[in-house]
Structure formats: C-alpha cells, structure tokens
Length: 262
Image 1: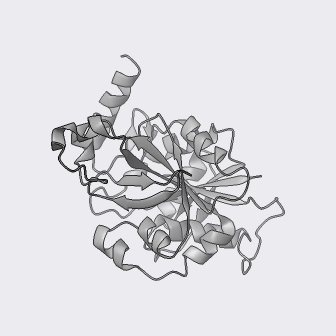
Image 2: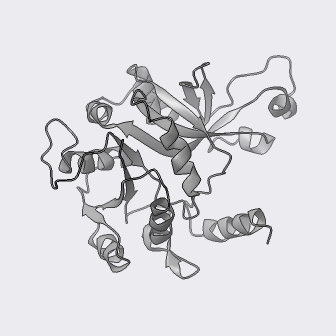
C-alpha cells in the first residue's frame, strides 16, 4: 500500500498572514514540515498543495514537490481532494503521471514545524488492511488546563478505537466528581490534527453538505460522523505544537527545547 502525503499551505491567514513562509531558526515553517514528513518511512511521496505562487516558488527553491490548487477551497480537506483528483485517485480524475496511485492520502498540517515522523508512521499503521475509511491521531489529555481548553478538541471512542464524537467541551461529563479531578478519574483524549483518507472515501466527503453538528462546534469531522463514516483513531505519545500566531513561534521553540532536555 502506498500513502500520498499532502501538506496544504495557504498564504492568506487572518491571524498570521504568510505563515508557511515564516522563518524559524534559519528555515521556513513549511520547509521544516516538509523535511520532517519526508523522514517518514510510510509515505510514498510528499507534496505541498498551495494556491499561492510565492509558496510554490519557495517549495521549488528547497527542491520540494508542489502543486498549485484553487484559491476557493474552504478547508484543507478540499485542497487535498483536488490533489487526489489531479493525480487520478478519484474515479472521475485524470492522472498526471504513471506512478502507482496510493490507496490513501494523508493530510499533514503545515503549521506544525516540529512534527515527529513517527506520528505519521503511527497513523499509517491503522491503514494497512485498507478497511479504515478515515483515520486520525489522538493523545491523552492528562492535565486539567488542557482538558478544559475549548481550543483543544476532545474525542470519545468505542472499543474499536473509532470516534464516537468530537467536541470542544469536556466529554464525558463526570457526575458527582469535582472538575479538578476529572483528568485523574477518567482517561480523556484530545485530537491531534492529522488525517488519512481512503481515496474513494475522500471523493465522497467532498460532496457532503455542511452539517448541523459541524456548524455548532465548528469541527469538520462531525460532518463525516453525522453522515455515517467511521473515523479510526491512532494513539500517539508525541504532543502536537501548532503555530497559529507569530508569538507562538517562541513558545513552540521553548517547548521543544524543554522536551529535548535543553
């Protein structure tokens, strides 16, 4: 089985314009993501998908592979879907090459410059039998501040480690237990933003209308759950450090230094 890694990259961002090109200790954020993803033993190919010529030129400058996509996509999933279509991975697509089409496409976040390649390999492990429709990463939420942070998406699972629901609220609610003890009394999980889609399923996802739960929580994955698709979750031990604003760069550098024992 082959897995195509795609890094969606937008220049326009209300909180951090030009974020993919932001420099972090001598390399752009995007180059760092690309190089880390390329270290994975699971990906057959890594491609940046962008709507911006500046980003495309930058990727070419560091000898990366890039494809230009529409500037009308509302999400990274839609941008990934255009890549899949251009590479002939959809039934209606037209192939742009003679390589063997991968069975899965992995959406790698372009704003996590210190992503650990083993995270990609962990996610890939649940794809080997070809049965997973959609897969994503989760990590234990073992701190109260993380658990009650509405910016951190929590997830509950069934015994097959498939997602039952994603929420910005704490789920499940622990009745008759003080909130400061919830993380000590129950194993909670939060979502790590990386997806793998089976290509036939990805084609179907692009045709789904926005759902009521998706609107309520502003979480795209709820659209898929409402439509009956299964999201398999793989547990990682590596935390995810996302950069949303310029000031996050220094915070992430400090976190990485602490993790390395420096």
